[in-house]
Every structure is written in structure tokens, then in C-alpha cells.
Length: 391
Image 1 (spheres, rainbow, N blue to C red):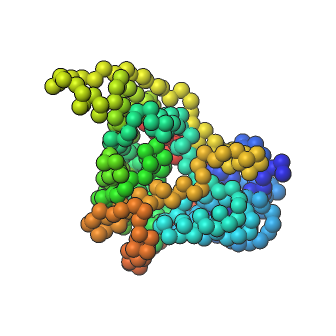
Image 2 (cartoon, rainbow, N blue to C red):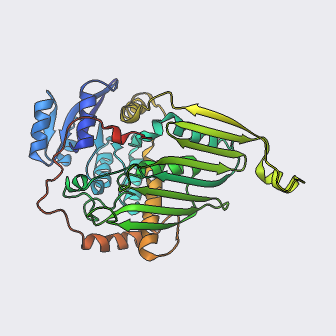
């Protein structure tokens, strides 16, 4: 195989942007051959935009067509796992938009189908291509700063207006979207958090529903986490603050790193703080340190980088930047945070799949879509800066 034939399922904001960039030849070795959407107006837009590309009303018709080697899933969240499972069963490679799914129970079923298929499976965590996050990942995984003590991420620059939430009948509902800021905007950051620091042992979530908007899910959340070694994490996010903040600070036994405003400041202690603490004879000693500042000199390759990596993995066996099996990790955190907030208790990870699913069904039972609103008609075929790392 020298070219991957791909179909895009879901022709909204994300799907249309992926389709356009593939069609324009921006991803080497990836050819757009099919588009699917249940909305006729979107299908018509795809027909007018792409010559020699087959347009389908249902994803099953696309999978049955035999035209594709791989699919990209860009539908509302609840459909990610069922479509992926059917695709794997049809022998397709799969790249899913984030989140991997709404709840861990369905993600595990998807992961099992992926394993059985032996096909390439990736998830669109495009912020993993940011050079500063990659550097932080390498530093912490290689223990350059010793053992983790504390992680604090204030990520409140996901600002959204009421018009945004009103733009789709499924948005900001338990039945349609499955959650709020933790499931829609912050999955990128939850993924980066666990990618750099690993999954915590347990979490305590505080999720404020409709604090800043007329919606039925949370638009403001604080998650407190504890690790096996006693380290702690605090994650604060919101779609209702302006101007917002994006500041990640990680403290460890041999120093600290801070990422903010497009640069990383690394402070390296000359000796491990734990050793210094119990061996120094100075009551108020200050540990000597060295400071390194790394500016973000490269723009992340973002969505195109993940698409190219996915294609290269199929054609050449390249290692995935964002393996699909990693997708369950950030959902573990968000599911645990929701369950903790609903039950007013600590929740251990991995989260109890059945308990969370039961509680989510209770929420969804009384969920209401936005009657009379458009069903997300947007499909402008452009990547927005809001989907990249913003400082």
C-alpha cells in the first residue's frame, strides 16, 4: 500500500476541516475518498466542495462500500465508540476525535475491538505535538526532576459564549454531549496532565453546573488529585472566565518546571530536596539551583501532525504520537471527577465503570436538547486557533 484511502464521518467543524486539508493534499499518503453526515445540507456542501469523493448518509453505508482503508470519526461524543467498533470489525484503521468516548465502559469495549482487529488506532490529541508539552513529558518520564510532588494546572482560557452552546441541539446536554468543559474542551489538558505526570490514585471533583451559562452541564470545574507516592494535583478549568489563564506548574524533588505564555522555565536543584532536608545543618538554607528558559520556537503541527503520523503508522509502522488506547486515561479522570461531584466523595482510579454508567444514565434520563435550535449546521472547513494551544 502506498496510499491510505480515508473516509471522514461527521462533516461539522472538525470533520469538514480534516476533509478539506486531506483533499488539498496536505497529508502525504492520505487520500479523501468518502464523507458521511446525516444532515443533508452538510452532504450537499461536501458534494459541492469535493470532486470524485463519495458522499454517504450513514456511516454503515460508508463502511460497507469497501472504498476506504481508514476512517476519521468527528461526530458527537456518544457515537465515537460505536462507530469505531463497527469500523474495526470491518477491518478499518481508526482515528477518533477526542474524547475517545463518554464513559470508560464503552471505551473498554472499543479498545477490545481495536486489539482484535490489529489495525492502527489513534485519537486526536493534537496538543501532544506542542514542543513544550513534549519536553515536559520527556523530563518527567526520565525523572530528570526526581519524583513528583505537586501538579497545578490553571486552564481557564477555554472561554465560550452562550451562542456557542446554542449552536447545536446536542451541545452542553447529558444526553447529547455527555458532559461539559471536562468532556468537551479540557480533554486535551487532562490528557497532557496524565501523559506528563501519570494517572493519580484518586480524585475529588467539584463541578459547577451552569455557573456562567444557561446549560445543564458543568462550565467550571476543580479537580483535586492524589498520587500513590503522596504527590497531589490540582486542575482548574472553566469556559466562563475572561481573560483566562493557561499555566502549568510541576514541582518535584529535584526542581520545578512552569509552562506559561509560550515558554517553559525549568529550575533544577543541585541536590534532591529530600536529601537536603534531612542532611542540612542550616535551619533556613536555600538549595542552590540553575534556571533554564525554553521558548516555544516551533508551532505545533497540531491536527495535521496527528493526521500525518496516523498515515505514517499505517504505511510505514511509525510510532503513534497519540495512540487510541491512551484515550481512556483522561476519561478516567473526568468520569471520576463527575462521580465524585455527584456523590460528594473521593473516587479511586480506575473508576467503577458500572457505577459511573448508572449515574450518567440518571442524568441523561432528564436531559433536554435545545428545542428549536439548529443542529450544528457549521462546516466551514477551516482549522480554528481555538483548537491549538493558546497562551
